[in-house]
Structures are given as C-alpha cells and as structure tokens.
Image 1 (cartoon, rainbow, N blue to C red):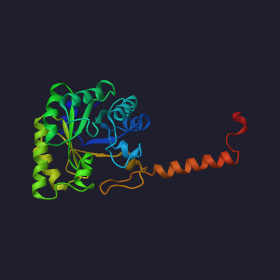
Image 2 (spheres, rainbow, N blue to C red; image 1 turned 60 degrees about the horizontal axis):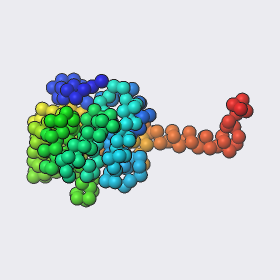
Image 3 (cartoon, rainbow, N blue to C red; image 1 turned 135 degrees about the vertical axis):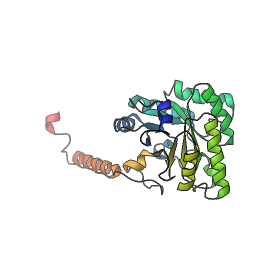
Image 4 (tube, rainbow, N blue to C red; image 1 turned 135 degrees about the horizontal axis):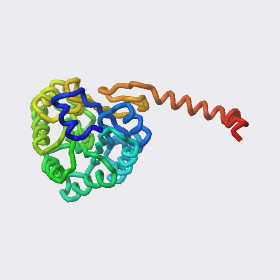
Length: 261
C-alpha cells in the first residue's frame, strides 16, 4: 500500500503517480486491483453520481458516506477524500472536525483541500494534528460561481505567479502533494520544478509527477468530456446494451429460463 511518505518520494524517484476518482465500493475495487496509486473520493461525486449541476451542494455527510464505501473496496491504494464546499476554511475548529471525521469515520488516509490564501493556516494546523493534506490549485471548481466557468487558470503572468506562490505556501504549510488543474503546461512544469512535493496534473500537461482523471470520463460513462480528458473505454454503451438485452428477454419470457425455477 502506498503511504504518504512513499507518494512524497515519487518526486525524486519512481514512476509517475496514478490517481483516479471512485465513489463506491465496486469501482474502488476495480481501480485498486488495476494498480492505481491513489483513489480520490472527489466531490465530483456531486456531478457524476448525485445529479447536481456543480460540486457546491455536496455535503460533508455525503462525502463521508462515499469515502467509507470506497475504503471498503480498497486494499492497496492510498485513499484521499475531498473536503466539500464550506466544510473547511470558514472556522478552524469546524475545519479540523470535518477533516478528522473523514479519517475517523470515513476511513480515508488523507484529505484534499481546494486551496486558497485562506487554507494555508488550516493546512498547517491539520498537518500538525497528523492529518495528511493534499493541496489543489489552478482551477478550483468550488469557486465556480466566483470565476464564472470552468476556464483555464494561469494564462497570464499575474495569475500564473499567484498560482505558483499559492503552491509554494501550501508546500511550506506541510501539504504532501498538490493537484494542478486546468492550467498551461509550461506553468505546471515550472511549478513542478520548483516544488519538492509531487504535483498531480489534470489538464496541466505531461510534466507533472502524476495524473488524475474522473473515473466516469476514463471508462466512458460520462455524457461529455472536458477538453483535457480522454475516454479509454465505452462502459456506457456496454451497460446500455446489457440493460436493453435484459429488458428484451424479460418481455419475450426468455429470462428467467424454466430450469431456474
């Protein structure tokens, strides 16, 4: 099982880090058996599983429930879980309690925080208490109402510098890794070269120390893909065909066969 120190060491040695989301036991088992290093219980569960338009409605209780389900399916991978919108950074004691519940009740190995200037001190405090923190800069979907859309970040010198400084401050605060989302590849490369902790990219080019995608995009279950994702399978078609076949055989009385009585 990869540990937090082992993941941190990948910055200096070893193959790129593989990270994939999962939201239930079945997918977690498959990802784990496939050798994925980090299974992320993303608040993207809101869009992919719960039917929300954004991640904003996702609650801490929903994240704990999905985290616990994923943990029950994982034997080897490191399980990291998102702290959802307004569950961290508003009040320190509440932030600590919510992060602690993810480990104590959900069973996660670490938490991921969509980072900003307001999360530097809480990252440091959580690490001091023994809660590993993965930071997240660039496009942070929990700020979708503020930024107005899922736009690439760091495209100009000022915003690129801001992202760099934020990444450095979270490394200094004790984050063990950092997600770089939807930014120019050269910016992600620069951040990766200047940090000692590993970077994990999503829509950030090929020069990060690892990659993460949403599992629904990878397996072909999503209706549409973001520009930086790739469909590696077509589970949606396979599921549709299987369900149609089931329906047809029930209607034609082929299922169940008489010898199953």
